[in-house]
Each structure stands twice: as C-alpha cells, then as structure tokens.
Image (cartoon, rainbow, N blue to C red; front, top):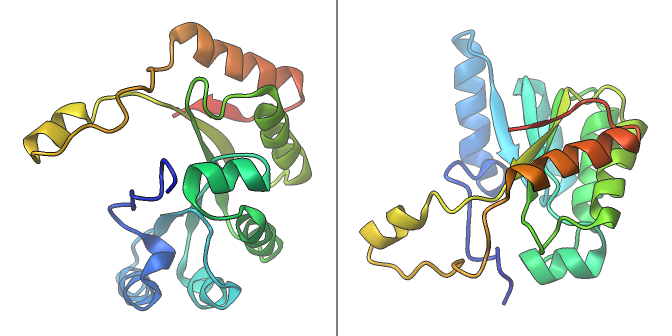
Length: 178
C-alpha cells in the first residue's frame, strides 16, 4: 500500500476518459479554455482522444525512478514518462507539476531529473514546484477522518529556495513555486 495511492484528484482527468472527453468537447463548443491535471497514468489511446480538445495539460511528475515512484504511488513511472513524451511530441501545451515533500521525494536525483525533463522539452510552458503543506488537516477532521500524513513536515522557506536554486544551477530556467 503506497502513501499516495488512496488519493485521487477532485477532477481525475484521464481516470474518467468518457466524462472528461464530453466535458472538454462541450467547453470547446462554448469557446472555453480547457485544461486537465493528470498523473499521466493512462493508455495512449485516451490521450489521442482528448488532446484535440485540450488547451493545457498540467502533468504531474511525483518521483524519480521506478521503485521510488511505485513506493509512493503504487505504480511504475514508466508509462507516465512515456505519456509525457507522447503528449509533448504531439504538440500539447504542458506545465510539469512537481509535488515536493521534504525527506520523501526532494532528493538531488529527483531535482536533476526534473531539470533533465525541462532541458529535453524546451516547449514546456513551465515547471511548477508544489511544496508540501498540511493545510488540508482541518478538512480531514471535518470529514471525521484521521489525518494519515501527520509524519510529513511542511516545506520551509529555505527548502523551497534550495529546490529552486538547485534546479537553476542544473539548467532548469523555467521553474517556479506554485
């Protein structure tokens, strides 16, 4: 059982492809800007169907290395990286979003991989670093649930600055805090 596997996005994007496709089509028919956030863990056939109706893709990159990714999310990052490449090669407008949790996935190797992705994909609209915080603790309590992430620490200002500095020193010029 992984740390993150029990959580789903409020708008799960590619996990509900038929619904997502219908919403995207309806939005485009009304002249609306379209965007989804995704982990990228889905068959390429889904990407083929939704990309024509998508203006922006918020693509999560949670951990570097197959084993670390599997430990944290319950799945391999292989298909995710393949889908990032696939969408990028088809001209998708992508912002790479990188949740950073102190002591969990903020290693030098992970920062180097983020930088490598940015250098390999110069058309990325940006790299957003999402520092961990426990702002949702109260919501869990209101729902009558135990906050299972209490062992995690909020990112400090120094850690956040360090992540951005490390990325810049590795050549990643378009990273910012989200």
